[in-house]
Image 1 (cartoon, chains in turn yellow, orange):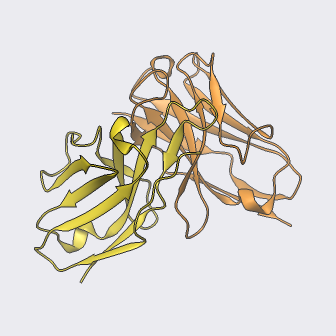
Image 2 (image 1 turned 180 degrees about the horizontal axis):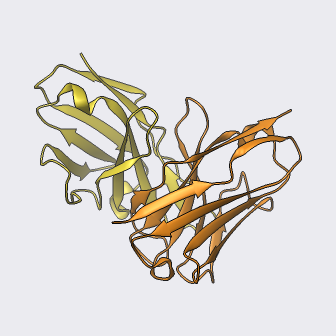
Image 3 (image 1 turned 120 degrees about the horizontal axis):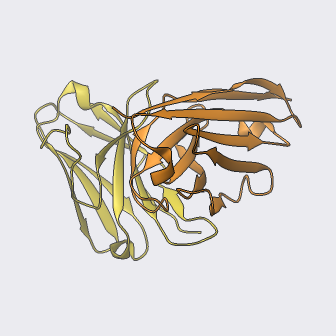
Length: 109
Length: 121
Protein backbone atom coordinates (compact mmCIF):
# COMPACT_ATOMS: atom_id res chain seq x y z
CA UNK A 1 0.00 0.00 0.00
CA UNK A 2 0.94 3.64 -0.36
CA UNK A 3 3.53 5.05 2.05
CA UNK A 4 3.96 8.62 3.32
CA UNK A 5 7.32 9.43 4.94
CA UNK A 6 7.79 12.18 7.54
CA UNK A 7 10.88 13.05 9.60
CA UNK A 8 10.36 11.93 13.21
CA UNK A 9 11.32 15.31 14.60
CA UNK A 10 11.93 18.92 13.63
CA UNK A 11 13.29 21.62 15.92
CA UNK A 12 13.00 25.36 15.42
CA UNK A 13 13.73 28.49 17.42
CA UNK A 14 10.88 30.80 18.41
CA UNK A 15 10.07 33.35 15.74
CA UNK A 16 11.62 31.25 12.97
CA UNK A 17 9.97 29.20 10.23
CA UNK A 18 9.40 25.45 10.57
CA UNK A 19 9.12 23.20 7.54
CA UNK A 20 7.79 19.66 7.89
CA UNK A 21 7.96 17.40 4.86
CA UNK A 22 5.76 14.51 3.76
CA UNK A 23 7.19 12.36 1.00
CA UNK A 24 5.34 9.92 -1.22
CA UNK A 25 5.58 8.47 -4.71
CA UNK A 26 3.66 10.65 -7.16
CA UNK A 27 2.23 12.63 -4.26
CA UNK A 28 1.42 15.31 -6.80
CA UNK A 29 -1.59 13.23 -7.80
CA UNK A 30 -3.14 13.37 -4.34
CA UNK A 31 -4.61 16.04 -2.09
CA UNK A 32 -2.51 16.30 1.06
CA UNK A 33 -4.04 17.22 4.41
CA UNK A 34 -2.19 18.18 7.61
CA UNK A 35 -3.27 17.70 11.22
CA UNK A 36 -1.85 19.17 14.41
CA UNK A 37 -2.07 17.05 17.56
CA UNK A 38 -1.07 18.35 20.97
CA UNK A 39 -0.40 15.87 23.81
CA UNK A 40 -3.56 14.24 25.12
CA UNK A 41 -5.75 15.93 22.52
CA UNK A 42 -7.49 14.97 19.30
CA UNK A 43 -5.96 15.95 15.96
CA UNK A 44 -7.01 19.26 14.41
CA UNK A 45 -7.02 19.96 10.68
CA UNK A 46 -4.64 22.85 9.91
CA UNK A 47 -4.12 22.61 6.13
CA UNK A 48 -6.18 20.75 3.51
CA UNK A 49 -5.95 20.13 -0.22
CA UNK A 50 -2.21 20.91 -0.15
CA UNK A 51 -2.51 24.65 0.51
CA UNK A 52 -5.92 25.63 1.92
CA UNK A 53 -6.51 26.65 5.50
CA UNK A 54 -9.70 25.94 7.53
CA UNK A 55 -11.40 28.90 9.14
CA UNK A 56 -9.89 29.70 12.52
CA UNK A 57 -6.40 28.47 11.64
CA UNK A 58 -3.79 31.26 11.73
CA UNK A 59 -2.28 32.46 8.46
CA UNK A 60 1.10 31.40 9.86
CA UNK A 61 0.16 27.86 8.77
CA UNK A 62 0.53 27.14 5.06
CA UNK A 63 1.27 24.26 2.74
CA UNK A 64 3.08 23.58 -0.48
CA UNK A 65 3.85 20.66 -2.73
CA UNK A 66 6.62 19.99 -5.24
CA UNK A 67 8.00 16.84 -6.80
CA UNK A 68 7.47 13.87 -4.50
CA UNK A 69 6.95 15.86 -1.30
CA UNK A 70 4.42 18.09 0.40
CA UNK A 71 5.52 20.59 3.03
CA UNK A 72 3.75 22.14 5.99
CA UNK A 73 5.17 25.58 6.70
CA UNK A 74 4.71 27.30 10.05
CA UNK A 75 6.03 30.85 10.15
CA UNK A 76 6.84 32.89 13.27
CA UNK A 77 6.76 29.74 15.39
CA UNK A 78 5.85 30.09 19.05
CA UNK A 79 5.74 27.68 21.99
CA UNK A 80 2.07 26.98 21.35
CA UNK A 81 2.93 25.33 18.04
CA UNK A 82 4.84 22.53 19.74
CA UNK A 83 2.92 19.40 18.75
CA UNK A 84 2.87 16.34 16.50
CA UNK A 85 1.99 16.98 12.87
CA UNK A 86 0.53 14.28 10.62
CA UNK A 87 0.05 14.32 6.85
CA UNK A 88 -2.70 12.28 5.17
CA UNK A 89 -3.94 11.46 1.68
CA UNK A 90 -6.83 9.63 0.02
CA UNK A 91 -5.30 7.25 -2.50
CA UNK A 92 -8.40 5.93 -4.29
CA UNK A 93 -7.06 2.44 -3.50
CA UNK A 94 -10.20 0.55 -2.64
CA UNK A 95 -8.36 -1.79 -0.28
CA UNK A 96 -6.68 0.88 1.83
CA UNK A 97 -7.74 4.32 0.63
CA UNK A 98 -6.63 6.45 3.58
CA UNK A 99 -2.96 6.78 4.50
CA UNK A 100 -1.27 8.77 7.26
CA UNK A 101 2.38 9.65 7.50
CA UNK A 102 4.24 8.53 10.61
CA UNK A 103 3.98 11.95 12.22
CA UNK A 104 6.57 14.62 13.07
CA UNK A 105 7.20 16.01 16.54
CA UNK A 106 7.83 19.78 16.32
CA UNK A 107 9.98 21.07 19.16
CA UNK A 108 10.27 24.79 19.81
CA UNK A 109 13.72 25.43 21.24
CA UNK B 1 -21.22 23.44 16.22
CA UNK B 2 -20.02 20.00 15.16
CA UNK B 3 -19.44 17.64 18.05
CA UNK B 4 -18.36 13.99 18.07
CA UNK B 5 -18.38 11.98 21.29
CA UNK B 6 -16.96 8.47 21.40
CA UNK B 7 -17.87 5.89 24.02
CA UNK B 8 -17.57 2.17 24.67
CA UNK B 9 -13.85 1.88 25.31
CA UNK B 10 -12.41 -0.08 28.21
CA UNK B 11 -10.27 -3.05 29.19
CA UNK B 12 -11.01 -6.38 27.55
CA UNK B 13 -9.23 -9.71 27.36
CA UNK B 14 -7.59 -10.92 24.21
CA UNK B 15 -10.06 -12.67 21.90
CA UNK B 16 -13.04 -10.76 23.21
CA UNK B 17 -15.26 -8.20 21.47
CA UNK B 18 -16.14 -4.55 22.01
CA UNK B 19 -18.42 -2.06 20.29
CA UNK B 20 -17.55 1.60 20.11
CA UNK B 21 -20.08 4.35 19.48
CA UNK B 22 -19.65 7.89 18.16
CA UNK B 23 -22.54 10.26 18.80
CA UNK B 24 -22.64 13.10 16.30
CA UNK B 25 -24.33 16.46 16.77
CA UNK B 26 -24.35 19.83 15.04
CA UNK B 27 -24.62 18.28 11.57
CA UNK B 28 -26.57 15.56 9.76
CA UNK B 29 -24.61 12.33 9.77
CA UNK B 30 -26.45 11.09 6.66
CA UNK B 31 -24.63 13.63 4.48
CA UNK B 32 -21.03 12.73 5.35
CA UNK B 33 -18.51 9.96 5.21
CA UNK B 34 -17.16 8.96 8.60
CA UNK B 35 -13.87 7.38 9.71
CA UNK B 36 -12.43 5.51 12.64
CA UNK B 37 -8.76 6.29 13.28
CA UNK B 38 -6.68 4.81 16.09
CA UNK B 39 -3.47 5.70 17.87
CA UNK B 40 -1.43 3.24 19.91
CA UNK B 41 0.34 4.71 22.96
CA UNK B 42 3.25 6.87 21.81
CA UNK B 43 2.63 6.08 18.13
CA UNK B 44 1.25 7.85 15.08
CA UNK B 45 -2.26 7.86 13.65
CA UNK B 46 -3.50 4.69 11.95
CA UNK B 47 -6.59 4.78 9.76
CA UNK B 48 -9.00 1.94 10.60
CA UNK B 49 -12.18 2.18 8.52
CA UNK B 50 -14.49 4.47 6.55
CA UNK B 51 -18.23 4.43 5.93
CA UNK B 52 -19.94 6.24 3.06
CA UNK B 53 -22.66 8.75 3.94
CA UNK B 54 -25.40 6.14 3.57
CA UNK B 55 -23.43 3.14 4.81
CA UNK B 56 -23.59 1.54 1.37
CA UNK B 57 -19.81 1.21 1.10
CA UNK B 58 -17.21 0.53 3.74
CA UNK B 59 -13.44 0.03 3.57
CA UNK B 60 -10.98 -1.26 6.13
CA UNK B 61 -7.28 -1.27 6.91
CA UNK B 62 -5.70 -4.65 6.33
CA UNK B 63 -4.87 -4.99 10.02
CA UNK B 64 -8.55 -5.07 11.00
CA UNK B 65 -10.28 -6.44 7.89
CA UNK B 66 -12.49 -9.40 8.74
CA UNK B 67 -12.47 -8.56 12.47
CA UNK B 68 -13.88 -5.01 12.65
CA UNK B 69 -17.16 -3.71 11.21
CA UNK B 70 -18.04 -0.05 10.77
CA UNK B 71 -21.73 0.83 10.64
CA UNK B 72 -24.03 3.75 11.25
CA UNK B 73 -27.57 4.64 12.27
CA UNK B 74 -28.28 7.88 10.45
CA UNK B 75 -31.68 8.18 12.10
CA UNK B 76 -29.92 8.38 15.48
CA UNK B 77 -26.81 10.23 14.24
CA UNK B 78 -24.53 7.52 15.59
CA UNK B 79 -21.50 5.76 14.10
CA UNK B 80 -20.33 2.37 15.39
CA UNK B 81 -17.25 0.17 15.32
CA UNK B 82 -17.75 -3.48 16.20
CA UNK B 83 -14.41 -5.02 17.12
CA UNK B 84 -14.07 -8.80 17.35
CA UNK B 85 -11.15 -11.14 18.07
CA UNK B 86 -9.22 -8.35 19.77
CA UNK B 87 -5.49 -8.70 20.33
CA UNK B 88 -2.91 -6.68 22.25
CA UNK B 89 -2.01 -4.95 18.97
CA UNK B 90 -5.48 -3.34 18.96
CA UNK B 91 -4.71 -1.43 22.17
CA UNK B 92 -5.16 2.21 21.15
CA UNK B 93 -7.17 5.35 21.54
CA UNK B 94 -9.91 5.22 18.92
CA UNK B 95 -11.10 8.46 17.31
CA UNK B 96 -14.10 8.98 15.08
CA UNK B 97 -13.71 11.71 12.46
CA UNK B 98 -16.11 13.45 10.09
CA UNK B 99 -15.11 13.67 6.46
CA UNK B 100 -15.79 16.71 4.31
CA UNK B 101 -17.15 14.44 1.54
CA UNK B 102 -19.95 11.92 1.49
CA UNK B 103 -17.71 9.13 0.23
CA UNK B 104 -14.94 9.71 2.76
CA UNK B 105 -12.47 10.93 0.15
CA UNK B 106 -11.97 14.40 1.59
CA UNK B 107 -10.31 15.76 4.68
CA UNK B 108 -11.18 14.89 8.28
CA UNK B 109 -12.49 18.23 9.41
CA UNK B 110 -13.82 17.31 12.86
CA UNK B 111 -12.64 14.73 15.40
CA UNK B 112 -13.95 13.30 18.64
CA UNK B 113 -11.87 13.29 21.80
CA UNK B 114 -11.20 9.54 21.52
CA UNK B 115 -11.94 6.48 23.62
CA UNK B 116 -9.22 4.18 24.98
CA UNK B 117 -9.32 0.46 24.29
CA UNK B 118 -6.90 -1.74 26.22
CA UNK B 119 -6.61 -5.41 25.33
CA UNK B 120 -4.99 -7.51 28.01
CA UNK B 121 -3.28 -10.76 27.20
